[in-house]
Image (tube, rainbow, N blue to C red):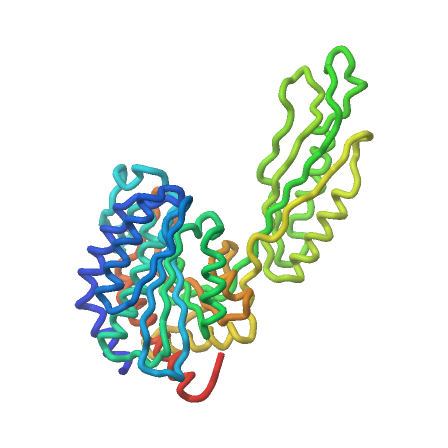
Length: 396
């Protein structure tokens, strides 16, 4: 199967692709809207089965159900591929009613808008339709492709992470369909995420009658906040933000407790170790006698680093792009995704293969429609290149 055939095959499926996209966007599927997420999953499951996949629902109580769809390929010595996309969005109930899927033009570009259109209902369909095109073309020189659609990525994948880890351990390469930036870009690295809480414990007293008997936890924490925020950007590849602060009950009480929550992003594990040491150093002391400072928390997702195995997969993606006349660029992102999980396990991973557009998590979130057909052809080519790489006796 040559690249020009994939470009040709994409055209006839786009009308159906857009109809599916409109249907999915018009379903509210915020992370905690289980009924809506399950409706999206049911829609996708029907389409997967129609395209020849075997499906399995992994039922959940708090979150929507996860969907695992598998297609057995024609090459027992071929690669085992894992595709990942999430069905949840960040938007509330009735958002789709207020601003349903719509077409418009912006700066000469045809765009589509609606809640989750970019992040990442279009990405789910791009992975699905690329596999459909490969199957229709008879280009299935893989051992298997498994597509996991998880329902809780927007809150850190708490219920789906064990599932993703299990599937990644059985895979030879992972493709993640988060938004794809510009047509010629994809994601090869993401910062890891860590969250910490710093607490100040003091002693309450009457602020007017016996203020000297109190030990002000808010004042103690205020000193900590200044020192903590000063750590931002002092370590290469590390950012820190004190994002929440809370303390006190009434103005006439010397507060005995206060806390702040901190978001940390790290490019690599060395940065993670360095910032944790710096946090411990700052919180080992207090500026207010009689108060105690404590530090809790830790890493939520490890950094998605450009390892040698990931670099080889990146080069295959770029080679696939060249067959379509695209000069692709791999970029790093400050936001996390499920790619952080799979890469940390040592499974070769690339991300950002989904749709292009902008303003994710924003009411004006949009997808560039003219971008999609060639991007679909690119995904097909990426799979073909990975399969050829394995047929030549190489492994990532």
